Amino acid sequence: MMSINNEIEEIEISIDSAKRTIELGKSLEKLKKNKEFKEIILDGYFNKEAVRLVGLKRDPNCQDPVQQADIDQALNGISELQEHFRKIERFADQAQAALEDFEAAKEEALLEE
Image 1 (cartoon, rainbow, N blue to C red):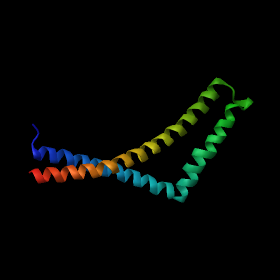
Image 2 (cartoon, one colour):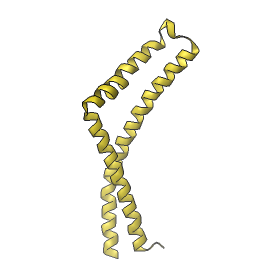
Image 3 (cartoon, helix red, strand yellow):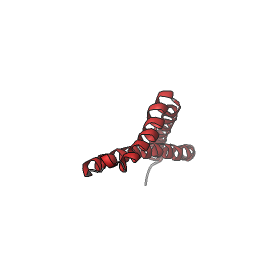
Image 4 (spheres, rainbow, N blue to C red):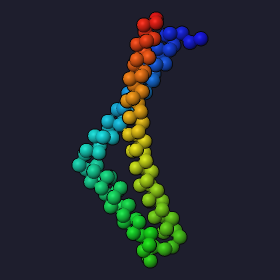
């Protein structure tokens, strides 16, 4: 059986982890508001570069299998970074919801102590 002290320690570890995840989400939100980040990543890479690469998929001068593989790899890179950002946001939202539960559980455990 787990002691109250061990339970409190595990809850505190969960609280710290949730807070770090929430901070990462906040950092991403700050980045998204940054003018240079918007210009280079959100608009430049996620939009303009993606459109350029999609256009190259059917460009008659870029039909060599190696060129097509390079284009696919570049498009996959864009998708991977977008997915990474979505995960940060999703995990931060989940951590925010869980944080309240962890803090309530800690209070309960402290009362039992």
